[in-house]
Amino acid sequence: MKITYLAAGAGEMYCGACAHDVNLTSGLLAEGHDVQLVPLYTPIRTDLDIPPTTEIFLGGIGVFLRQQFPWLSLPVFVEKLLRRSDLLAWAGKRAVKTNPSSLGPMTVSILKGKNGKQKKDLETLLLFLEEENCPDIVHITNSLLSGIAPVLKERLGCPVVCNIQGEDGFLDLMPEKYRKEATELVALNAQYIDCFISPSEIYKQRVQNYFSLPDDKIVVIPPAINTDIYSFSWKGVEDTWTIGYLSRISPEKGLDVLVEAIVSLKKKKKKGVAIKLKVAGKIMDYIFWENILLQAKAEGIVFEYVGELCLEDKIKFLRECSLFCAPSKQPESRGTVALEAIALGVPVILPEAGVFPEILQQTKGGILFQSSNSKDLAEKIHSLSSDDLKEFSFGHKNVQEKYSTKCLAVKTSRLYDRVLSGGMDK
Image (cartoon, rainbow, N blue to C red; front, side, top):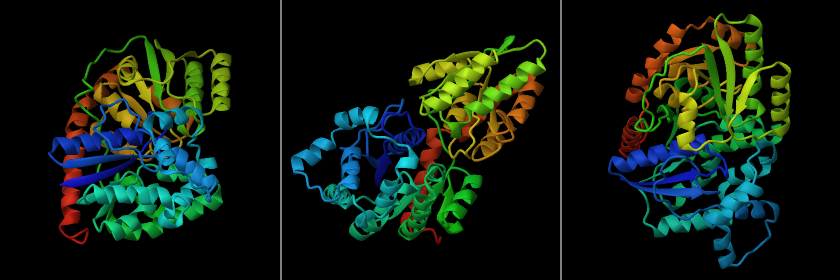
């Protein structure tokens, strides 16, 4: 099967969606499919081995310029220069931002497809796909790129499937005017998409209502990690419990909830246990971060920040954790880092929202707490014993069986077959 996969880069960040795209395309290649991985906006940045990619289309610099100066006409050689991966990577570190509060107009324009300001960039992509032989199926990484779907159907005539993996959280941070228009455009574009893929049943229900999508157009395929990389290694429980946090550092990810919980734990004085907080991830909101540091210092929390991590360092970081917490205030759609922790034998404590309840139901690798509730988080940690942590560590077996890259690729391949054999009506 010939598959074209359109994957949006996230600038300089290590991105969970990018990791999912790489895991899936790698798995499909291993299953013997012909996969064309097409990066959009910026190079794909992940700590995994990335399959061969085409040149970058809808380059972030050009898309931004088109949004600001729609009348601007550039020579062909300049257009090509602006799509160079090294230039886009440089721009991602210095200029191109992914803050949803400032990207409302561009998001709406992209969703308008051939009627948006980036229609020239879209035409370049379509000409490339036509010249490279039409694929059997096109897979779009997220619904905020669904403006491409109507033209794909018109020009290529092939089925289109689309992931839904956290766009609602991005849109919720936009000004209401742009959020409303964007959700309406996704619903409009949905008629040109054969199937949407949700990472969980709970998330399916959320996005179905959020984007007004029909139930029979959404299929659930759980997320995955490369389980060959994450090998189980139980290190036992020491007198000092290291609680780990690994995500981008911004208010919606809930690091403040975890810090407040640790403050409460210090007051509870868990018998025979000292608590250390270890934090990793890219700082996205420096004011928020400064407040975290001030509170940690004022409360005497034992605290360590290790920055943004590569794959090797991430595995080392997780192995050093007695307990891993992902305290996000938003319903998470993938939960990749939680799966990585469980695969390594590290127990997790996660909010009872988004994909997390299903992950823990399937893996038995930890416990849930009430979302955004620091007191409940503190009480749940306080109630844990060393024996509990040891029991949770065996969740790694279930990750191997249910959340591997091979599982993801096989389930997605079967969906493609279903779509190609007559669509979602069968």
